[in-house]
Length: 479
Image (cartoon, rainbow, N blue to C red; front, side, top):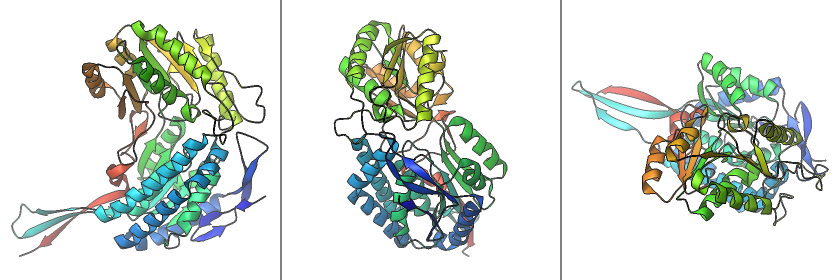
């Protein structure tokens, strides 16, 4: 069995221990043994990142461009190979895995270009004979804690801007998906960065995550994951004065109005709720349907859901891969059971597929007759489970859509410009889709939500500089 080490201070370092990386499509397939760091190794990664920060922060923009462009070019060239690895360890379909690697490459390409567009301002002072310059500088050491559901794209949209703007990185990926993180780190290790600029420390949240969050030598924390963990990290990191960026999930509504194109609405719901096995923070887990179209929509969506092929992630005919692990599968099934106890009706799916015992396969679940206050409509399931709420009209639909502690993404299916325009304005979400699935955003635009979904400045695109830089104002006497 191949062992994969951590990357600290420009060298590959053996872990304090190793853990197997298991294929959720076939649990007898072990991808490799991956290093697990302890607290001492996490501290060493932070130390070398701190030591490297001044040099990389003052590095030339050509060096940064070259490094990021190198990483991007290799990711794009190897998207088939790395996409297969991603699908093998995380369980999303091969097409989605390849697409995610391509997106990671595009993100690095974008931020390679951003290294050449770091702008500032030259302003006159209100006092004669003085000049004012406003510049952006790196924050310092950035700690990154990423989830398992997008094991290369989410690390890319954190690491790329951090390096582009002159920061150093201590990266802790999710323990379920160390393979994609290691593959990305291996490419970065050959990009010409000074030792200590980028560090990979696979390990537990209890040891490695805790060490990163509480270290005074880590100036900023970027986290994507669950609400409880994110809130805990935020409270402790902010208390010591660190800069914090949190993405913490969603319970995203898709509103379907009577005037919607039925085929478009069903496609939006099907893709948004079930693709990527529903394991997306932007998934359409609440489908809010007005009464005139409700029955036809449910019938059509149920038929489309039943027709989805669930299978091995790397089989080209598979549309829905396995759930990531047995713990997530059991959680999904409990949510379905709870919905039925509270009065919901299971139209299809909702059980473990018994003729596929080698993996964590679940039949996509569609639950109707739900009410806004039910658990299934309040808590993030993070699986192939969608609930339907019937409402009278647009105003009730909007009210139900906004009745959530989350506010990441929302969508509406309608042929009315009036309702589409109003929904874009009044929906309490950071991202709004019209006649599109709630999941899926471009890499060059801001990503983030409102309420309990996000905290701090946005990720991705030009808006990333708000988190990864700090502003300095300098005065010069010119006369």
